[in-house]
Length: 328
Image (cartoon, rainbow, N blue to C red):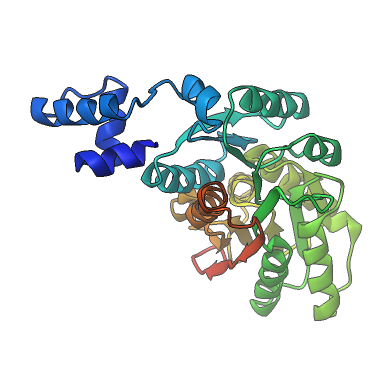
């Protein structure tokens, strides 16, 4: 029996049952509280998740491992996961790795020890993933990252084709008149999807690729700020910048403002993600939006459908979309 079953028998919501079982029922009527507790007692429901898991082999808890809780991209994914999990009667344990591979592996073991039913996982940008995934024997859904799953059936994946998003961003800059387009992104695994999307777009546009127009480091504000300054010292003819995410783009805008370079008149800037801050920059940031909330929702639905209904885990690609603002 699950919290959802208790809620159905008592004629209340899953949230109400959860609040009563966890002692957060100050605003719930005595009659409702009594009715829920009676259903719990009649069904011999074990409220402690770990104790219940020892008996049923199920805890109705899933884990979410994320690499950077400071990046506004990931809390939106977490919201989507929690919305679906709560409606299905599942709790969520959050683990932030700070992009540390050792911590990531420790959290995987921690969640397995807590007997979670499954894990949603956005891997760190460090090291090899193959060994990490080889040791995972419970259902797992990877969000956002490339996944070398080795053909394992207990692993699914939900992501956006960011290579194509960067390809389109580069083409948007070219269509706006840019002829010297730079890339500022992460150096994760040296050169991956974003880099190749950019290179392919230049080739298709007939624009010569120049290594000196590329700056790769991390997905953060500092990379955008330092990268823009570095690139302009190498090549002051740059008139467009495609950025690996919106945080980088915001750092780029800050650097250009301090250098008294006008955006978009002198240099045009494209981001990726459409985090909430993108609408409040000066000028407001044009970007390729990733459906962050939907990434979380789809990942959670995939995992929970697998856990409750035995549905197979699979791979799903979600669409990005262009958001036109003032930096282009």
